[in-house]
View (tube, rainbow, N blue to C red):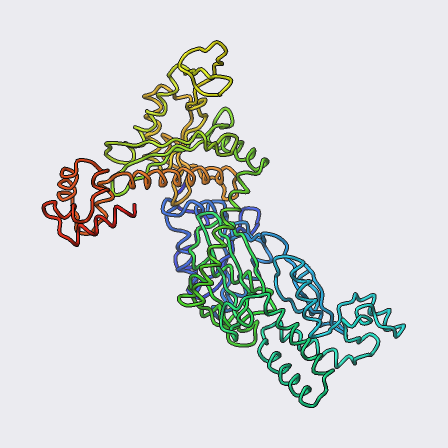
Length: 634
Protein backbone atom coordinates (compact mmCIF):
# COMPACT_ATOMS: atom_id res chain seq x y z
CA UNK A 1 0.00 0.00 0.00
CA UNK A 2 1.41 3.38 -0.99
CA UNK A 3 2.02 5.73 1.93
CA UNK A 4 0.75 8.76 -0.06
CA UNK A 5 -2.77 8.96 -1.42
CA UNK A 6 -3.01 9.55 -5.17
CA UNK A 7 -5.70 12.22 -4.80
CA UNK A 8 -3.82 14.26 -2.20
CA UNK A 9 -4.17 17.98 -3.11
CA UNK A 10 -1.06 19.91 -4.11
CA UNK A 11 0.69 22.05 -1.48
CA UNK A 12 -1.09 25.38 -1.03
CA UNK A 13 -4.15 24.23 -2.97
CA UNK A 14 -6.38 23.85 0.09
CA UNK A 15 -7.60 27.24 1.43
CA UNK A 16 -7.23 28.29 5.04
CA UNK A 17 -10.85 29.53 5.25
CA UNK A 18 -13.67 27.84 7.14
CA UNK A 19 -15.66 25.34 5.13
CA UNK A 20 -17.08 21.87 4.63
CA UNK A 21 -15.31 18.96 2.90
CA UNK A 22 -16.52 15.72 1.32
CA UNK A 23 -14.64 12.50 0.61
CA UNK A 24 -16.02 10.52 -2.36
CA UNK A 25 -15.29 7.02 -3.66
CA UNK A 26 -14.55 6.08 -7.28
CA UNK A 27 -18.27 5.89 -8.06
CA UNK A 28 -18.87 9.41 -6.75
CA UNK A 29 -20.65 8.34 -3.55
CA UNK A 30 -20.06 10.67 -0.61
CA UNK A 31 -18.23 8.69 2.09
CA UNK A 32 -17.67 11.32 4.75
CA UNK A 33 -18.68 14.94 5.43
CA UNK A 34 -16.85 17.17 7.87
CA UNK A 35 -16.45 20.84 8.75
CA UNK A 36 -13.38 22.86 9.67
CA UNK A 37 -12.49 26.34 10.84
CA UNK A 38 -9.32 26.01 8.77
CA UNK A 39 -9.72 23.61 5.84
CA UNK A 40 -6.01 23.29 5.13
CA UNK A 41 -5.13 22.49 8.72
CA UNK A 42 -7.98 19.98 9.11
CA UNK A 43 -7.51 18.13 5.83
CA UNK A 44 -3.75 17.84 6.32
CA UNK A 45 -4.53 15.43 9.18
CA UNK A 46 -6.13 13.01 6.69
CA UNK A 47 -3.14 13.15 4.34
CA UNK A 48 -0.52 12.36 6.98
CA UNK A 49 1.50 9.15 6.37
CA UNK A 50 -0.98 6.27 6.41
CA UNK A 51 0.92 4.34 9.08
CA UNK A 52 0.27 7.20 11.55
CA UNK A 53 -3.51 7.29 11.01
CA UNK A 54 -6.08 5.59 13.16
CA UNK A 55 -7.12 2.34 11.49
CA UNK A 56 -10.70 3.40 10.85
CA UNK A 57 -9.59 6.77 9.45
CA UNK A 58 -7.06 4.96 7.27
CA UNK A 59 -9.81 2.73 5.92
CA UNK A 60 -11.92 5.76 5.00
CA UNK A 61 -9.18 7.67 3.17
CA UNK A 62 -8.00 4.58 1.29
CA UNK A 63 -11.59 3.79 0.25
CA UNK A 64 -12.02 7.35 -1.05
CA UNK A 65 -10.87 8.41 -4.52
CA UNK A 66 -11.24 12.18 -4.20
CA UNK A 67 -11.85 15.02 -1.79
CA UNK A 68 -13.62 18.31 -2.41
CA UNK A 69 -14.42 21.30 -0.26
CA UNK A 70 -16.68 24.34 -0.15
CA UNK A 71 -15.57 27.59 1.48
CA UNK A 72 -18.18 29.42 3.58
CA UNK A 73 -18.12 32.91 5.13
CA UNK A 74 -18.40 31.90 8.81
CA UNK A 75 -18.06 28.93 11.13
CA UNK A 76 -21.82 28.97 11.72
CA UNK A 77 -22.38 28.59 7.98
CA UNK A 78 -20.10 25.55 7.99
CA UNK A 79 -22.26 24.00 10.72
CA UNK A 80 -25.42 24.53 8.68
CA UNK A 81 -23.89 23.19 5.46
CA UNK A 82 -22.38 20.14 7.19
CA UNK A 83 -25.75 19.27 8.73
CA UNK A 84 -27.54 19.71 5.38
CA UNK A 85 -25.05 17.50 3.50
CA UNK A 86 -25.10 14.75 6.14
CA UNK A 87 -28.88 14.67 5.86
CA UNK A 88 -28.75 14.71 2.06
CA UNK A 89 -26.00 12.17 1.37
CA UNK A 90 -26.17 9.91 4.48
CA UNK A 91 -22.39 9.22 4.35
CA UNK A 92 -21.46 5.73 5.60
CA UNK A 93 -18.38 6.93 7.54
CA UNK A 94 -20.21 9.59 9.56
CA UNK A 95 -21.67 8.50 12.87
CA UNK A 96 -24.92 6.57 12.53
CA UNK A 97 -27.84 7.18 14.84
CA UNK A 98 -30.38 4.60 15.96
CA UNK A 99 -33.34 5.33 18.18
CA UNK A 100 -33.66 2.58 20.77
CA UNK A 101 -37.31 2.52 19.78
CA UNK A 102 -40.01 4.71 18.27
CA UNK A 103 -41.10 7.04 21.07
CA UNK A 104 -44.60 8.52 21.42
CA UNK A 105 -44.97 12.30 21.49
CA UNK A 106 -47.72 14.67 22.51
CA UNK A 107 -48.51 16.94 19.55
CA UNK A 108 -50.63 20.09 19.38
CA UNK A 109 -51.74 20.81 15.80
CA UNK A 110 -51.25 24.59 15.83
CA UNK A 111 -51.69 24.69 12.06
CA UNK A 112 -55.38 23.72 12.34
CA UNK A 113 -58.27 26.16 12.64
CA UNK A 114 -59.14 24.59 16.00
CA UNK A 115 -55.91 22.92 17.19
CA UNK A 116 -56.18 19.55 18.90
CA UNK A 117 -53.87 17.52 21.12
CA UNK A 118 -53.04 13.94 20.18
CA UNK A 119 -50.60 11.09 20.76
CA UNK A 120 -48.38 10.35 17.75
CA UNK A 121 -45.07 8.99 16.59
CA UNK A 122 -45.22 11.10 13.42
CA UNK A 123 -42.78 14.02 13.74
CA UNK A 124 -43.83 15.62 10.44
CA UNK A 125 -47.33 17.02 11.10
CA UNK A 126 -47.35 20.52 9.49
CA UNK A 127 -47.35 23.29 12.07
CA UNK A 128 -47.52 20.92 15.07
CA UNK A 129 -45.81 21.61 18.40
CA UNK A 130 -44.34 18.50 19.99
CA UNK A 131 -43.74 17.60 23.64
CA UNK A 132 -41.86 14.56 24.88
CA UNK A 133 -40.80 12.00 23.92
CA UNK A 134 -42.52 9.86 26.54
CA UNK A 135 -41.27 6.40 27.54
CA UNK A 136 -44.73 4.79 27.25
CA UNK A 137 -47.92 5.55 25.30
CA UNK A 138 -50.03 5.34 28.45
CA UNK A 139 -47.91 8.08 30.02
CA UNK A 140 -48.89 10.48 27.21
CA UNK A 141 -52.58 9.60 27.45
CA UNK A 142 -52.49 10.01 31.22
CA UNK A 143 -50.90 13.45 30.90
CA UNK A 144 -53.46 14.55 28.29
CA UNK A 145 -56.36 13.30 30.41
CA UNK A 146 -55.13 15.38 33.34
CA UNK A 147 -54.29 18.43 31.23
CA UNK A 148 -57.67 18.77 29.50
CA UNK A 149 -59.30 19.08 32.90
CA UNK A 150 -57.42 22.36 33.28
CA UNK A 151 -57.29 23.30 29.59
CA UNK A 152 -60.31 21.69 27.82
CA UNK A 153 -58.96 21.83 24.28
CA UNK A 154 -59.99 19.66 21.39
CA UNK A 155 -59.02 15.97 21.32
CA UNK A 156 -61.45 14.62 18.70
CA UNK A 157 -60.41 13.50 15.20
CA UNK A 158 -60.70 15.77 12.17
CA UNK A 159 -63.63 13.71 10.89
CA UNK A 160 -65.54 14.13 14.16
CA UNK A 161 -64.78 17.86 14.16
CA UNK A 162 -66.11 18.34 10.61
CA UNK A 163 -69.25 16.33 11.37
CA UNK A 164 -69.92 18.39 14.49
CA UNK A 165 -69.37 21.62 12.55
CA UNK A 166 -71.97 20.51 9.98
CA UNK A 167 -74.58 19.30 12.48
CA UNK A 168 -73.98 21.82 15.27
CA UNK A 169 -73.98 18.95 17.76
CA UNK A 170 -70.88 18.66 19.97
CA UNK A 171 -68.56 15.70 19.49
CA UNK A 172 -68.44 13.06 22.20
CA UNK A 173 -65.64 14.72 24.28
CA UNK A 174 -67.65 17.95 24.13
CA UNK A 175 -70.79 16.19 25.35
CA UNK A 176 -69.05 14.79 28.43
CA UNK A 177 -67.26 18.05 29.26
CA UNK A 178 -63.76 17.12 28.13
CA UNK A 179 -63.64 19.74 25.37
CA UNK A 180 -64.60 23.40 25.29
CA UNK A 181 -66.66 22.76 22.16
CA UNK A 182 -65.28 24.91 19.31
CA UNK A 183 -67.02 22.60 16.83
CA UNK A 184 -70.47 23.47 18.21
CA UNK A 185 -69.51 27.06 19.04
CA UNK A 186 -69.90 26.48 22.78
CA UNK A 187 -66.68 28.49 22.81
CA UNK A 188 -65.46 30.63 19.92
CA UNK A 189 -62.45 29.71 17.80
CA UNK A 190 -60.59 32.64 19.37
CA UNK A 191 -61.40 31.50 22.91
CA UNK A 192 -60.35 27.95 22.06
CA UNK A 193 -57.10 29.24 20.54
CA UNK A 194 -56.41 31.11 23.80
CA UNK A 195 -56.87 27.85 25.74
CA UNK A 196 -54.51 26.10 23.32
CA UNK A 197 -51.91 28.83 23.82
CA UNK A 198 -52.19 28.36 27.60
CA UNK A 199 -51.89 24.59 27.17
CA UNK A 200 -48.72 24.98 25.09
CA UNK A 201 -47.26 27.57 27.47
CA UNK A 202 -47.85 25.29 30.45
CA UNK A 203 -46.28 22.27 28.74
CA UNK A 204 -43.31 24.44 27.73
CA UNK A 205 -42.59 25.16 31.39
CA UNK A 206 -44.94 27.90 32.58
CA UNK A 207 -45.90 26.04 35.75
CA UNK A 208 -45.75 28.82 38.33
CA UNK A 209 -47.73 31.40 36.35
CA UNK A 210 -50.75 29.11 35.93
CA UNK A 211 -50.81 27.81 39.48
CA UNK A 212 -50.46 31.37 40.78
CA UNK A 213 -53.22 32.74 38.52
CA UNK A 214 -55.64 29.88 39.24
CA UNK A 215 -55.05 30.20 42.99
CA UNK A 216 -55.76 33.94 42.81
CA UNK A 217 -58.95 33.40 40.79
CA UNK A 218 -60.14 30.63 43.10
CA UNK A 219 -59.68 32.81 46.20
CA UNK A 220 -61.36 35.78 44.50
CA UNK A 221 -64.36 33.68 43.45
CA UNK A 222 -64.63 32.24 46.93
CA UNK A 223 -64.51 35.71 48.48
CA UNK A 224 -67.28 36.81 46.10
CA UNK A 225 -69.26 33.70 47.18
CA UNK A 226 -69.21 32.42 43.58
CA UNK A 227 -68.59 28.91 44.81
CA UNK A 228 -69.35 27.21 41.50
CA UNK A 229 -66.58 29.17 39.75
CA UNK A 230 -64.25 28.60 42.71
CA UNK A 231 -64.87 24.86 42.43
CA UNK A 232 -63.96 24.92 38.74
CA UNK A 233 -60.73 26.75 39.49
CA UNK A 234 -60.03 24.29 42.30
CA UNK A 235 -60.48 21.33 39.94
CA UNK A 236 -58.19 22.90 37.34
CA UNK A 237 -55.60 23.59 40.00
CA UNK A 238 -55.81 19.96 41.17
CA UNK A 239 -55.35 18.74 37.60
CA UNK A 240 -52.26 20.91 37.14
CA UNK A 241 -50.80 19.75 40.45
CA UNK A 242 -51.46 16.14 39.41
CA UNK A 243 -49.49 16.67 36.19
CA UNK A 244 -46.63 18.27 38.10
CA UNK A 245 -46.68 15.41 40.59
CA UNK A 246 -45.97 12.93 37.78
CA UNK A 247 -42.50 14.36 37.23
CA UNK A 248 -40.05 15.11 40.00
CA UNK A 249 -38.56 18.58 40.38
CA UNK A 250 -34.89 17.91 39.58
CA UNK A 251 -33.69 21.47 38.88
CA UNK A 252 -34.87 24.96 39.92
CA UNK A 253 -38.48 25.56 38.85
CA UNK A 254 -37.48 28.18 36.27
CA UNK A 255 -34.97 25.88 34.55
CA UNK A 256 -35.61 24.90 30.91
CA UNK A 257 -32.81 22.66 29.69
CA UNK A 258 -31.88 19.58 27.73
CA UNK A 259 -29.30 17.29 29.32
CA UNK A 260 -27.27 14.69 27.42
CA UNK A 261 -25.60 11.78 29.22
CA UNK A 262 -23.18 9.84 26.99
CA UNK A 263 -21.35 6.52 27.42
CA UNK A 264 -19.00 5.40 24.68
CA UNK A 265 -16.33 2.94 23.64
CA UNK A 266 -14.22 2.72 20.50
CA UNK A 267 -17.07 1.64 18.24
CA UNK A 268 -20.35 2.81 19.69
CA UNK A 269 -21.97 5.28 22.06
CA UNK A 270 -25.27 5.47 23.91
CA UNK A 271 -27.00 8.80 24.56
CA UNK A 272 -29.64 9.58 27.17
CA UNK A 273 -31.46 12.84 26.36
CA UNK A 274 -33.41 14.30 29.31
CA UNK A 275 -35.93 17.00 28.35
CA UNK A 276 -36.34 19.34 31.36
CA UNK A 277 -39.03 22.02 31.39
CA UNK A 278 -39.92 24.03 34.46
CA UNK A 279 -37.26 22.12 36.38
CA UNK A 280 -38.98 18.77 35.73
CA UNK A 281 -38.04 15.90 33.44
CA UNK A 282 -40.82 16.00 30.83
CA UNK A 283 -39.33 13.50 28.39
CA UNK A 284 -36.52 11.00 27.93
CA UNK A 285 -35.04 9.81 24.66
CA UNK A 286 -32.36 7.17 24.06
CA UNK A 287 -30.06 6.98 21.05
CA UNK A 288 -27.40 4.53 20.01
CA UNK A 289 -24.55 5.77 17.84
CA UNK A 290 -22.19 3.69 15.72
CA UNK A 291 -18.83 5.34 15.12
CA UNK A 292 -16.91 4.72 11.91
CA UNK A 293 -14.22 7.42 12.00
CA UNK A 294 -12.15 7.92 15.16
CA UNK A 295 -13.65 10.97 16.89
CA UNK A 296 -13.08 12.60 20.25
CA UNK A 297 -15.71 12.99 22.96
CA UNK A 298 -16.01 16.70 22.09
CA UNK A 299 -16.61 15.87 18.41
CA UNK A 300 -19.19 13.28 19.41
CA UNK A 301 -21.10 15.86 21.49
CA UNK A 302 -20.99 18.21 18.47
CA UNK A 303 -22.55 15.53 16.25
CA UNK A 304 -25.18 14.61 18.86
CA UNK A 305 -26.32 18.24 19.19
CA UNK A 306 -26.57 18.65 15.43
CA UNK A 307 -28.67 15.48 15.23
CA UNK A 308 -30.91 16.55 18.13
CA UNK A 309 -31.61 20.11 16.96
CA UNK A 310 -31.24 20.04 13.18
CA UNK A 311 -35.01 19.88 12.64
CA UNK A 312 -36.11 20.69 16.18
CA UNK A 313 -38.80 23.22 17.00
CA UNK A 314 -38.23 23.19 20.74
CA UNK A 315 -34.72 24.43 21.58
CA UNK A 316 -34.25 25.24 25.29
CA UNK A 317 -32.26 28.13 26.66
CA UNK A 318 -29.64 25.83 28.21
CA UNK A 319 -28.08 22.58 26.97
CA UNK A 320 -26.05 20.52 29.46
CA UNK A 321 -23.38 18.18 28.07
CA UNK A 322 -20.58 16.04 29.57
CA UNK A 323 -17.88 17.66 27.42
CA UNK A 324 -17.87 21.06 25.77
CA UNK A 325 -17.52 20.88 21.93
CA UNK A 326 -14.57 22.72 20.38
CA UNK A 327 -16.95 24.93 18.39
CA UNK A 328 -19.38 25.56 21.25
CA UNK A 329 -19.64 29.28 20.40
CA UNK A 330 -20.61 28.54 16.79
CA UNK A 331 -23.11 25.89 17.93
CA UNK A 332 -24.71 28.43 20.27
CA UNK A 333 -25.16 30.89 17.38
CA UNK A 334 -26.54 28.09 15.18
CA UNK A 335 -29.05 27.12 17.89
CA UNK A 336 -29.91 30.76 18.55
CA UNK A 337 -31.13 31.07 14.96
CA UNK A 338 -33.49 28.15 15.58
CA UNK A 339 -34.75 29.35 18.95
CA UNK A 340 -34.82 33.08 18.26
CA UNK A 341 -33.20 33.70 21.64
CA UNK A 342 -29.87 33.12 23.33
CA UNK A 343 -28.86 29.47 23.90
CA UNK A 344 -26.14 28.38 26.33
CA UNK A 345 -24.15 25.14 26.04
CA UNK A 346 -22.58 24.24 29.38
CA UNK A 347 -20.94 21.36 31.23
CA UNK A 348 -22.81 20.13 34.32
CA UNK A 349 -20.06 20.37 36.93
CA UNK A 350 -21.68 20.69 40.36
CA UNK A 351 -24.88 20.63 42.35
CA UNK A 352 -28.21 19.34 41.05
CA UNK A 353 -27.11 19.51 37.43
CA UNK A 354 -24.10 17.32 38.10
CA UNK A 355 -26.29 14.83 40.00
CA UNK A 356 -28.70 14.63 37.08
CA UNK A 357 -25.81 14.25 34.63
CA UNK A 358 -24.53 11.29 36.65
CA UNK A 359 -27.99 9.73 36.48
CA UNK A 360 -28.19 10.22 32.71
CA UNK A 361 -24.66 8.89 32.22
CA UNK A 362 -25.43 5.80 34.32
CA UNK A 363 -28.50 5.15 32.17
CA UNK A 364 -26.37 5.60 29.04
CA UNK A 365 -23.78 3.11 30.33
CA UNK A 366 -26.48 0.53 30.98
CA UNK A 367 -28.01 1.17 27.55
CA UNK A 368 -24.61 0.64 25.89
CA UNK A 369 -24.18 -2.67 27.72
CA UNK A 370 -27.67 -3.77 26.67
CA UNK A 371 -26.99 -2.79 23.08
CA UNK A 372 -23.78 -4.79 22.90
CA UNK A 373 -25.30 -7.72 24.75
CA UNK A 374 -28.25 -7.91 22.36
CA UNK A 375 -25.88 -8.08 19.44
CA UNK A 376 -23.93 -10.96 20.91
CA UNK A 377 -26.83 -13.00 22.30
CA UNK A 378 -29.21 -12.85 19.35
CA UNK A 379 -29.10 -16.19 17.51
CA UNK A 380 -28.80 -14.67 14.03
CA UNK A 381 -26.16 -12.22 15.23
CA UNK A 382 -24.19 -15.02 16.94
CA UNK A 383 -24.23 -17.13 13.81
CA UNK A 384 -23.10 -14.18 11.72
CA UNK A 385 -20.36 -13.36 14.23
CA UNK A 386 -18.90 -16.87 14.14
CA UNK A 387 -19.05 -16.96 10.34
CA UNK A 388 -17.38 -13.55 10.08
CA UNK A 389 -14.66 -14.65 12.49
CA UNK A 390 -13.99 -17.78 10.48
CA UNK A 391 -13.56 -15.73 7.29
CA UNK A 392 -11.55 -12.89 8.86
CA UNK A 393 -9.09 -15.23 10.61
CA UNK A 394 -8.84 -17.70 7.72
CA UNK A 395 -10.08 -20.66 9.78
CA UNK A 396 -11.32 -23.89 8.23
CA UNK A 397 -14.35 -24.03 10.54
CA UNK A 398 -16.35 -21.65 12.68
CA UNK A 399 -14.92 -21.24 16.22
CA UNK A 400 -17.76 -22.82 18.19
CA UNK A 401 -15.63 -22.78 21.35
CA UNK A 402 -13.52 -19.71 22.08
CA UNK A 403 -11.35 -19.28 25.16
CA UNK A 404 -10.17 -15.79 26.08
CA UNK A 405 -7.25 -15.05 28.43
CA UNK A 406 -6.40 -11.86 30.32
CA UNK A 407 -3.63 -10.96 32.77
CA UNK A 408 -4.26 -8.73 35.79
CA UNK A 409 -1.87 -7.44 38.46
CA UNK A 410 -1.34 -4.55 40.85
CA UNK A 411 1.97 -2.85 40.17
CA UNK A 412 3.52 -6.18 39.23
CA UNK A 413 2.28 -7.96 42.37
CA UNK A 414 -0.54 -10.45 42.83
CA UNK A 415 -0.35 -11.46 39.18
CA UNK A 416 -3.36 -13.51 38.11
CA UNK A 417 -4.92 -14.63 34.85
CA UNK A 418 -8.43 -15.44 33.77
CA UNK A 419 -9.90 -17.78 31.21
CA UNK A 420 -13.47 -17.28 30.04
CA UNK A 421 -15.25 -19.63 27.66
CA UNK A 422 -17.86 -18.87 25.01
CA UNK A 423 -19.59 -21.70 23.19
CA UNK A 424 -21.79 -20.91 20.20
CA UNK A 425 -21.33 -17.24 21.02
CA UNK A 426 -22.64 -17.53 24.60
CA UNK A 427 -20.71 -17.58 27.89
CA UNK A 428 -20.14 -20.88 29.71
CA UNK A 429 -19.52 -19.56 33.21
CA UNK A 430 -19.26 -23.03 34.70
CA UNK A 431 -16.03 -23.46 32.71
CA UNK A 432 -14.36 -20.18 33.63
CA UNK A 433 -10.96 -20.63 35.26
CA UNK A 434 -8.51 -18.40 37.13
CA UNK A 435 -4.75 -18.83 37.54
CA UNK A 436 -2.25 -17.55 40.06
CA UNK A 437 1.19 -16.71 38.69
CA UNK A 438 3.97 -16.91 41.26
CA UNK A 439 6.89 -15.49 39.27
CA UNK A 440 6.93 -13.67 35.96
CA UNK A 441 8.95 -11.10 34.07
CA UNK A 442 6.16 -9.33 32.17
CA UNK A 443 2.67 -9.80 30.68
CA UNK A 444 3.95 -11.82 27.72
CA UNK A 445 5.74 -14.25 30.02
CA UNK A 446 2.57 -14.50 32.15
CA UNK A 447 0.50 -15.23 29.06
CA UNK A 448 2.95 -17.94 27.95
CA UNK A 449 2.90 -19.61 31.38
CA UNK A 450 -0.90 -19.65 31.64
CA UNK A 451 -1.42 -21.03 28.16
CA UNK A 452 1.13 -23.80 28.71
CA UNK A 453 -0.68 -24.77 31.90
CA UNK A 454 -4.04 -24.75 30.16
CA UNK A 455 -2.80 -26.64 27.05
CA UNK A 456 -1.20 -29.33 29.22
CA UNK A 457 -4.70 -30.53 30.13
CA UNK A 458 -5.42 -31.39 26.50
CA UNK A 459 -2.80 -34.15 26.56
CA UNK A 460 -3.97 -35.83 29.75
CA UNK A 461 -6.13 -38.95 29.55
CA UNK A 462 -9.78 -38.44 30.27
CA UNK A 463 -10.45 -38.54 34.00
CA UNK A 464 -13.47 -40.49 35.26
CA UNK A 465 -15.25 -40.63 38.59
CA UNK A 466 -17.75 -42.97 40.25
CA UNK A 467 -21.17 -41.60 41.22
CA UNK A 468 -23.59 -43.20 43.68
CA UNK A 469 -26.97 -43.05 41.84
CA UNK A 470 -28.93 -42.78 45.10
CA UNK A 471 -27.08 -39.74 46.47
CA UNK A 472 -25.46 -38.44 43.28
CA UNK A 473 -22.24 -38.08 45.28
CA UNK A 474 -18.73 -39.09 44.25
CA UNK A 475 -17.64 -42.39 45.88
CA UNK A 476 -14.15 -43.80 46.32
CA UNK A 477 -14.96 -47.35 45.17
CA UNK A 478 -17.59 -49.23 43.19
CA UNK A 479 -20.67 -49.84 45.36
CA UNK A 480 -22.26 -52.21 42.87
CA UNK A 481 -24.59 -49.83 41.10
CA UNK A 482 -22.29 -46.82 40.78
CA UNK A 483 -22.29 -45.02 37.45
CA UNK A 484 -19.26 -43.64 35.68
CA UNK A 485 -19.12 -40.10 34.37
CA UNK A 486 -16.43 -37.81 33.06
CA UNK A 487 -14.76 -35.72 35.70
CA UNK A 488 -15.35 -32.01 35.05
CA UNK A 489 -12.30 -30.45 33.45
CA UNK A 490 -11.50 -28.19 30.51
CA UNK A 491 -14.18 -29.83 28.29
CA UNK A 492 -13.06 -30.22 24.68
CA UNK A 493 -10.27 -28.26 22.94
CA UNK A 494 -11.09 -24.74 21.72
CA UNK A 495 -11.06 -23.84 18.06
CA UNK A 496 -9.81 -20.33 18.90
CA UNK A 497 -7.70 -18.81 21.66
CA UNK A 498 -8.21 -15.06 22.14
CA UNK A 499 -5.76 -13.00 24.19
CA UNK A 500 -6.21 -9.50 25.50
CA UNK A 501 -3.41 -7.54 23.88
CA UNK A 502 -1.60 -6.75 20.68
CA UNK A 503 1.24 -8.28 18.73
CA UNK A 504 3.57 -9.17 21.68
CA UNK A 505 0.85 -11.06 23.55
CA UNK A 506 -0.25 -12.88 20.38
CA UNK A 507 3.32 -13.98 19.61
CA UNK A 508 3.67 -15.29 23.18
CA UNK A 509 0.44 -17.26 22.77
CA UNK A 510 1.56 -18.66 19.42
CA UNK A 511 4.86 -19.76 20.98
CA UNK A 512 2.94 -21.54 23.77
CA UNK A 513 0.85 -23.40 21.16
CA UNK A 514 3.97 -24.45 19.23
CA UNK A 515 5.79 -25.62 22.34
CA UNK A 516 2.71 -27.57 23.47
CA UNK A 517 2.32 -29.16 20.03
CA UNK A 518 -1.17 -27.79 19.42
CA UNK A 519 -0.73 -25.65 16.33
CA UNK A 520 -4.15 -26.83 15.10
CA UNK A 521 -5.73 -24.25 17.47
CA UNK A 522 -6.08 -20.77 16.02
CA UNK A 523 -5.00 -17.76 18.06
CA UNK A 524 -5.56 -14.01 17.81
CA UNK A 525 -5.48 -10.96 20.05
CA UNK A 526 -7.58 -7.83 20.37
CA UNK A 527 -5.87 -4.57 21.29
CA UNK A 528 -8.17 -2.34 23.33
CA UNK A 529 -7.03 1.12 22.24
CA UNK A 530 -7.78 0.72 18.55
CA UNK A 531 -9.85 -2.48 18.65
CA UNK A 532 -7.38 -4.13 16.26
CA UNK A 533 -7.30 -7.90 15.78
CA UNK A 534 -3.78 -9.33 15.57
CA UNK A 535 -2.70 -12.66 14.12
CA UNK A 536 0.70 -14.29 14.80
CA UNK A 537 3.39 -13.45 12.26
CA UNK A 538 1.47 -10.56 10.67
CA UNK A 539 2.93 -7.05 10.51
CA UNK A 540 -0.47 -5.41 10.22
CA UNK A 541 -3.67 -6.09 12.16
CA UNK A 542 -6.96 -7.35 10.80
CA UNK A 543 -9.49 -4.49 10.80
CA UNK A 544 -13.03 -5.71 11.26
CA UNK A 545 -15.83 -3.31 10.21
CA UNK A 546 -17.31 -1.32 13.08
CA UNK A 547 -20.71 -2.92 12.42
CA UNK A 548 -19.24 -6.43 12.38
CA UNK A 549 -20.94 -8.88 14.71
CA UNK A 550 -17.57 -10.63 14.98
CA UNK A 551 -15.94 -7.55 16.49
CA UNK A 552 -18.72 -7.18 19.05
CA UNK A 553 -18.30 -10.84 20.03
CA UNK A 554 -14.53 -10.39 20.50
CA UNK A 555 -15.14 -7.25 22.55
CA UNK A 556 -17.58 -9.09 24.77
CA UNK A 557 -15.10 -11.91 25.32
CA UNK A 558 -12.28 -9.50 26.09
CA UNK A 559 -14.40 -7.44 28.50
CA UNK A 560 -15.68 -10.56 30.27
CA UNK A 561 -12.14 -11.93 30.67
CA UNK A 562 -10.98 -8.59 32.04
CA UNK A 563 -13.88 -8.46 34.52
CA UNK A 564 -13.22 -12.02 35.70
CA UNK A 565 -9.48 -11.39 36.08
CA UNK A 566 -10.02 -8.21 38.10
CA UNK A 567 -12.50 -9.98 40.37
CA UNK A 568 -10.04 -12.80 41.09
CA UNK A 569 -7.15 -10.40 41.55
CA UNK A 570 -9.08 -8.32 44.11
CA UNK A 571 -10.18 -11.45 45.97
CA UNK A 572 -6.59 -12.62 46.15
CA UNK A 573 -5.49 -9.23 47.45
CA UNK A 574 -8.04 -9.48 50.25
CA UNK A 575 -6.63 -12.87 51.21
CA UNK A 576 -3.03 -11.73 50.92
CA UNK A 577 -2.24 -10.31 54.35
CA UNK A 578 0.94 -8.61 53.13
CA UNK A 579 -1.00 -6.66 50.51
CA UNK A 580 -3.69 -5.80 53.03
CA UNK A 581 -1.16 -4.55 55.57
CA UNK A 582 0.65 -2.57 52.88
CA UNK A 583 -2.48 -0.43 52.55
CA UNK A 584 -2.05 0.84 56.14
CA UNK A 585 -0.28 4.26 56.13
CA UNK A 586 3.11 4.12 57.81
CA UNK A 587 3.45 0.35 57.60
CA UNK A 588 6.36 -0.67 55.38
CA UNK A 589 7.73 -4.01 54.26
CA UNK A 590 10.13 -4.39 57.22
CA UNK A 591 7.44 -3.74 59.84
CA UNK A 592 5.04 -6.14 58.07
CA UNK A 593 7.73 -8.84 58.25
CA UNK A 594 8.27 -8.20 61.97
CA UNK A 595 4.49 -8.31 62.63
CA UNK A 596 3.97 -11.64 60.88
CA UNK A 597 7.04 -13.12 62.62
CA UNK A 598 5.80 -11.94 66.03
CA UNK A 599 2.27 -13.37 65.73
CA UNK A 600 3.24 -16.46 63.78
CA UNK A 601 0.02 -16.62 61.72
CA UNK A 602 -2.47 -14.42 59.93
CA UNK A 603 -5.28 -15.72 62.17
CA UNK A 604 -3.45 -14.66 65.34
CA UNK A 605 -2.72 -11.21 63.92
CA UNK A 606 -6.36 -10.67 62.94
CA UNK A 607 -7.51 -11.73 66.43
CA UNK A 608 -5.01 -9.47 68.24
CA UNK A 609 -6.22 -6.41 70.15
CA UNK A 610 -4.60 -2.99 69.58
CA UNK A 611 -2.67 -3.34 72.86
CA UNK A 612 -1.18 -6.66 71.74
CA UNK A 613 -0.16 -5.23 68.37
CA UNK A 614 1.46 -2.28 70.15
CA UNK A 615 3.86 -4.71 71.88
CA UNK A 616 5.61 -5.37 68.56
CA UNK A 617 8.86 -3.43 68.18
CA UNK A 618 8.40 -0.30 66.07
CA UNK A 619 4.57 -0.24 66.34
CA UNK A 620 3.13 2.72 68.27
CA UNK A 621 -0.39 3.06 69.71
CA UNK A 622 -1.78 5.04 66.75
CA UNK A 623 -0.34 2.62 64.18
CA UNK A 624 -1.54 -0.36 66.22
CA UNK A 625 -5.07 1.03 66.25
CA UNK A 626 -4.91 1.67 62.48
CA UNK A 627 -3.77 -1.91 61.84
CA UNK A 628 -6.53 -3.36 64.00
CA UNK A 629 -9.21 -1.19 62.37
CA UNK A 630 -7.99 -2.03 58.87
CA UNK A 631 -7.91 -5.78 59.47
CA UNK A 632 -11.31 -5.82 61.15
CA UNK A 633 -12.91 -4.24 58.07
CA UNK A 634 -11.35 -6.61 55.53
